[in-house]
Amino acid sequence: MNTQDLIGQQIQDILVWYKMEPYGLDEGEVYLVLDEGKIFSIPWSFDSRLIEEAPKQGSRSIFGESKKRESEQNSIWSSIKKALYNIKYHILNDGPIDREILQLQYQKIVDFIVIEDHSVGFIVLENGCIITETMMAPHGLGRAGLNLYYSLEEFEKSYGEDYIRLSKS
Image 1: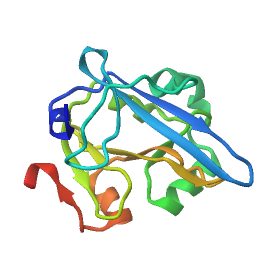
Image 2: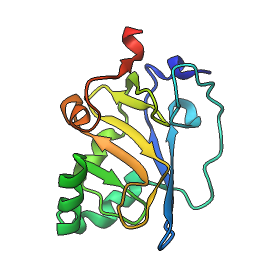
Image 3: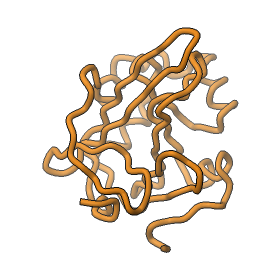
């Protein structure tokens, strides 16, 4: 299976593994549970060969966690991070999640975006959301883990328009 085979697959679940390292680098890994329960990481390029893999121990579903943390959805810190990074929502194992995150479940993958000199690709969903992962980030910034953009416009605010779409390559 390769990156192109993701097109048309439906996201059943998204699992996130997260490790905080005070005064160091936080780490995060994202796993997509697709049709038939197959689990993959977000690919790096159009040519990536996808290998089904077991998520790291301690990975948790963002959909199961969303109901537990609804009260934190409008925290001041969450609002500051959204403003600083032009990200509508960013998900960590221990960070806040809002109700809107539930709209990612059961969405079909419709495209894949690659940016030169970026370590991982971006998955475009049928509802217009774009997801990616940041594998490492300085502690306290809240950037490691799953990054979510609710539209192409929000995505372009952070990365510009210099990207390649699988559908147009």
